[in-house]
Length: 311
Ligand SMILES: C[S@@+](CC[C@H](N)C(=O)[O-])C[C@H]1O[C@@H](n2cnc3c(N)ncnc32)[C@H](O)[C@@H]1O
Image (cartoon, rainbow, N blue to C red; front, side):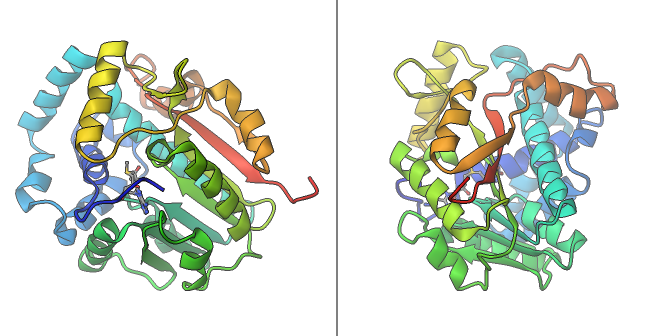
């Protein structure tokens, strides 16, 4: 996992949760988010203590929305909307897996996203587990309790996965290796070193039965094998990379969409879906009258299935 999760809650995670509130405050964009997700994210953030109360309130002001619109006009439009599309796709992938028989959900590096608890509340017969580093998982747990969202089939595990393998973390929570599952790693793999990504894929396989699914987002990579922000020009890409490095969350891994199938085959998976921006637009934007809305997907999405060892 990422080199060293810090002592404070992940800044990227609080930012992304804040983006959900911001998106929800723009009436034409709000319907793209998974239903109820922004309200749940807000309840979690407020009760978590991970960010000042005022920070949460600011996300919903007209001034912040205007500021964002101005920033996007300058740096490229559609970046905020990308988070909404990504969250919607992840939610639908999980719902689809459950509809097709999955009975366990695992969200790794969950941040302040309400996905696991939302799904747990909708499906009392599905075990939902989320894991994050202690500095993020502990306030998240407090946020879920304090926000009135806790439910018996959901658990937040606090573990630094750089130090403890997934199998050991999940074992203590009653996770079953023989139950069909769906695992989500959204906005996570780009922070891992290449060897850690391979280890993660092996660990997910070790924790799940064949036919289980893994959904993740990934950055592209440039000629030097460095993660590349898809929408950003060289200069902006470099600026964002430096900002993330300074925030203690440097980008470390990326893969070109075309390289995903052979890479995952070697790792014991089969690709089920790699939606293109056009497919995502048709599925999530066009139905809301947003066919022409700028969208800046800075990463790509992958849904894969765990093959059995013979397969
Ligand atoms: C960019 S955030 C994404 C949060 C969430 N998945 C989302 O999309 O809203 C990355 C998350 O991975 C977590 N993470 C990074 N390294 C980790 C580690 N070694 N162990 C556990 N979690 C880790 C961070 O704490 C953070 O919450």
